[in-house]
Image (cartoon, rainbow, N blue to C red; front, side):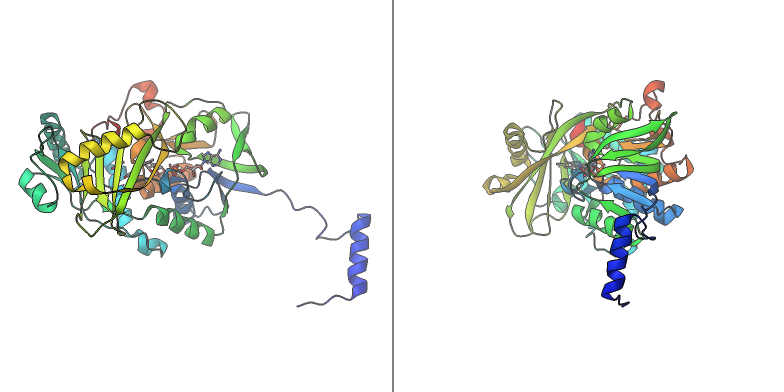
Length: 414
Ligand code: FAD
Ligand code: PYC
């Protein structure tokens, strides 16, 4: 370590005071990031990660008003599947599912991906038709799913009651390579990898304004000061409308609360994920033994990150018919997140009316499964200005009427 005499230190202090200082006194030139991503949820972090990994863009900051993964990414029920109907959706969700398979190795971080299989129960004639159609579309898209009989459902889920009086199980759409992953770990894994590439992740830093001149983004105002950037990605899920308003345009999304709960832990009793979309309930068992249960979305717009009694009652009452054993369980935790819903239940990954501002939102009730595919595609869009995976998800589809209807696949949000 270099040592200074007391005289040298005094001289430097004097010079500094007089304004004669040397390099350490002169102000740092203001830093300008190549890209800023607003929102350190899974989609924002994955976007930053692939900007660095796939496109060599590492002078990047990720700004988060709360904490890493504290939005919907850390609040969801972790279901991963790619059994969507339309080709554009199958492409991005299947890309994501396949990236989940190797995510722990890619990030050198155990995200506990568990391809245990996901089934969507058909409990009405309408659902049978819908899921058979999806299975056929998936076959053409190269996504492996099948429509299975009630007996096969029972053999995969012995605790299920297939003869319910109101909603008997008539079959199911089954994706054996679907499953779950640890949601926080996905955020933490991407964050660590971004940090290792030299990116700045700034938590407790709320974006309060967006600066643009002559139709081009200049930077953002935040609770920690002003920051300049060349490009800006807005990836804030339920707060999309708020950020778009700051940039001066409107988005076709609505924000509503979606909620979930877990029971006390019990011994292993169900090793697949079951979704029952007619009754708006879905269930899996966590590695800790808790039954993870989710319900439908609120029917009114709000920003409240918590559940509501009538939903819990409705969801649990409906699920008890199909899973009688849960009637004896106690509820352990219960929470909500604010999801961003589009009219066609498909996401928006797009350029915006302001040059070099890009937006990624509209994943609604189903974006956890999409995180790696969305990050991959969004990074390409930001770096190159186009991506084959995002083309059909642009904002212009709402003007042109080219909707990507996924109301059946969205399940909980149909
Ligand atoms: P988020 O994780 O919400 O991240 C956005 C971030 O932006 C937040 O951290 C927020 O604090 C930050 N932010 C907002 N405003 C600002 C600002 N002004 N400045 C700085 N930062 C800001 N999907 C599935 O695929 N499978 C499921 O099983 C599933 N279950 C769900 C269950 C529930 C109860 C909920 C709520 C959602 C569920 N989802 C599921 C949906 C999924 O969680 C979301 O689609 C996904 O997590 C969205 O990720 P994100 O990164 O876009 O958003
Ligand atoms: O998209 O698979 C899903 C899902 C399940 C629960 C909430 N979303």
